[in-house]
Length: 176
View 1 (tube, one colour):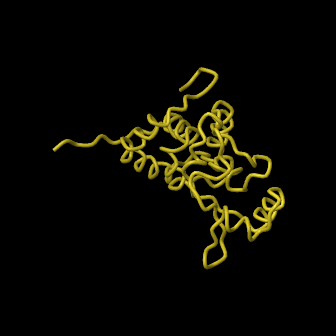
View 2 (spheres, one colour):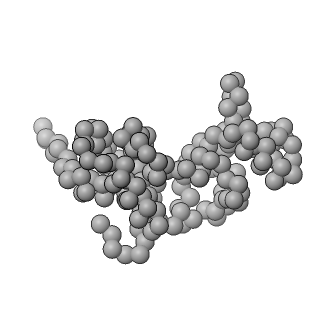
């Protein structure tokens, strides 16, 4: 699809495409559910190539739009790094559910500054893993991956290239 050194990060375009391709992407999700090829291998290869050509620091949209879960260990490490107690960190940066799950208490994330993570070396596991295209079991995560189609340039470009590689053809809407 793209022979240049980087993939474009036009969040407005990607958001519009996401809205316009809702039906097509639902058809693609069903298509991939029945796809006979090695989907993980295709996705891993695409992810490796596309991720290397998308500058996440030029985007930061995930940090501006996702709720991030934080483990107890991550919270303790962050409190130590920030020179505060866990209780102080909870009061200022985290929310705790009735079940004890911790999440960052604001969107965008407190630690996003000029599209860069100020705690990057100690960023949370969910941040390191996003968008998760390097993991096996893509077929089981197609729905959740498509939820990020309009948010993440890596997901958008990967899905669009995957449509071509798998020879997906969208059914045309009939006009009434």
